[in-house]
Length: 280
Ligand code: C2E
Ligand code: CA
Ligand code: CA
Ligand code: CA
Image (cartoon, rainbow, N blue to C red):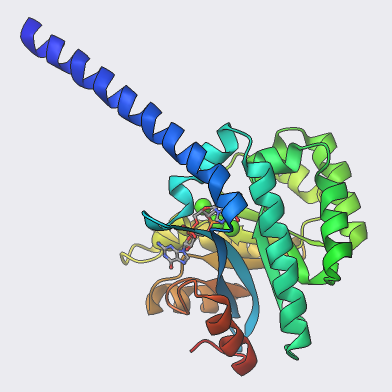
């Protein structure tokens, strides 16, 4: 037992070191990535479940690393948050999304709305509103085409501050979506006080729809009717198969997003789908 304990200890230390090294490596590479323009946005369509038509897109950050290849957000967003780089990265994302909105408008694609994920640290940063306003002004993007996706926990951390900031954002014309809805612990009474346009049902609930058990779809059904009562658009994310799609449609969920419709794609591919109005 003693022997094994020692091995475990060594393994643990080794593991800790590896993680610290990896994090250090990612952090220094992230700094370079910003300077060298290694980030790009992919886009995933949101689809009206009744008509099948594309209503907007979500911008998803991708990192094209010269040696590591395409790096997904789960590998670097948390690290970027911890070392503060999420603020300049978030600015890059907002500017890139606004520039894309302008490009699509100039290409004659009517009012493609682009949703951008905003992390806690960005939203809490004192300059967030002013920087967003500057980016919108500089790029000439229509704020009405911009939707900010915020998680419940971000909004609930400081309700008064969140409410004041959301009011300013709404006055600018930006739309607000609650991302990963249902995974936080928000009080519905607070939620009702925020000027929220869209509820995004977390994919974990959408996954639970299959399996044939009636209760599995109960949460999704409850969220859809709640959103309707609060006059919010409800979108289900992570829709992967026809059974989920059919369930959501039957329960009058407004929109869906997921591999069933399209994976996230590059801007040019997204542009072709936007032009067609439907997923390829
Ligand atoms: P999220 O905002 O919940 O985004 C949805 C994630 O689910 C995306 O992963 C998307 O590619 C994936 N997805 C879409 N449809 C399906 C499906 O049918 N099945 C499954 N299993 N997954 C699906 P991705 O792009 O890897 O992003 C992961 C997370 O990273 C995002 O979760 C978001 O929290 C964060 N993220 C992405 N881009 C940004 C960004 O620009 N800024 C910040 N702060 N966070 C970002
Ligand atoms: Ca999102
Ligand atoms: Ca989400
Ligand atoms: Ca998520």
